[in-house]
Image (cartoon, rainbow, N blue to C red):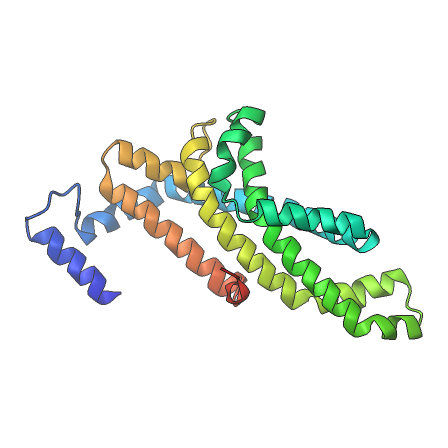
Length: 239
């Protein structure tokens, strides 16, 4: 990292590149501090994080419901697996045009795209976890005649805690990446916008230091959440 920063600063000070292409590190730091002081960076970061967590909360409830339905009906499970195989590989930005046709350019559309990006990792991991727990403790639950409340809390909820943490980490990483792309389009909706629109706005005004300050903020948020809140969550992500 130090070497990369040194190479950047040398390129910026060499005079061979315009400032709009390679601004100095101090210019980027100054822009970052200015955005912090005026509150713009904080508000936009909070808005972006809030959207991701809202989508993850909705996705978690939907994933739990889908897991419950799939355990009740084999036909429903096959249908859900079919939907997953079709929709999971699609990045959020790929479904953007059809969502705009359906719901227009609105925050509802943005949340729907974010739910699409975060739902399928949660469903897949939780379904595998429940299947594993049912296989491991099925005879135990039948032998001791555990009621549904006890099975749900002590077997499934507590038993799938680590898998849930892992799936939330994967869901966060997918949602965070999708959000920035989506916000560059949906940031124009209303006065409340996020980091994606900040980057797009700074690019339009040729404010390269501000643009890079936004990118640094995105990287910091991604690193902090994945290393602290969802530590180890991406380790099980399948590519």
